[in-house]
Image (cartoon, rainbow, N blue to C red; front, side):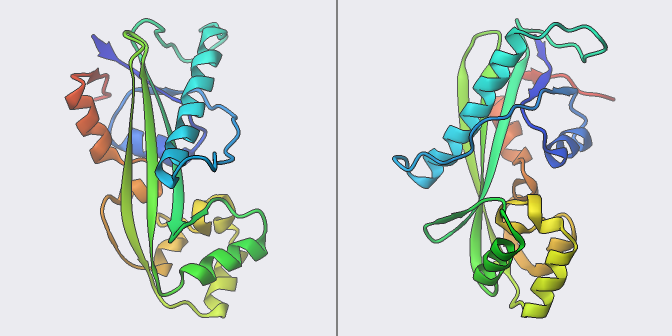
Length: 209
């Protein structure tokens, strides 16, 4: 059976990655607590947040009628996909900055160093109710940044809705000297690992020509 992706995310960046890969999908953004469970290790914390998003989407789908111009979906066969991305430096998790000062502190911390970007993906197969997940890590190497460079970047407002206070696909790419791994993972969705998971589970996804 051919499945459509139900994307449990409001991220325009994740939508863009799926669009460029020509997947047919519908977005059902969810709002859940993204406060990490400190009883878990870092990778487990990120997976748990992605799981919350997928479960919240499942509850939303159960009470949503596919009418009033809403995109169609099939509760008997489609695939719920959620994700959570976190910038990690040593034992610290750097989420979205709550202020310009926090953005400055994050970028100052990352300047001239290597950090990890971890994205957890959580999937629920509505046909079998099977749940599966993965986590992908990309190493990102930052240039040595001056205070002036950091402050000018913060003035663009781009850092304020990005984990770690930068967007590699935007102006934040100028802060990066190199990276090891999947570029899309840093943007917010590890496409190569995700497509490998589709193959392992023998899922056929609906594509747009």
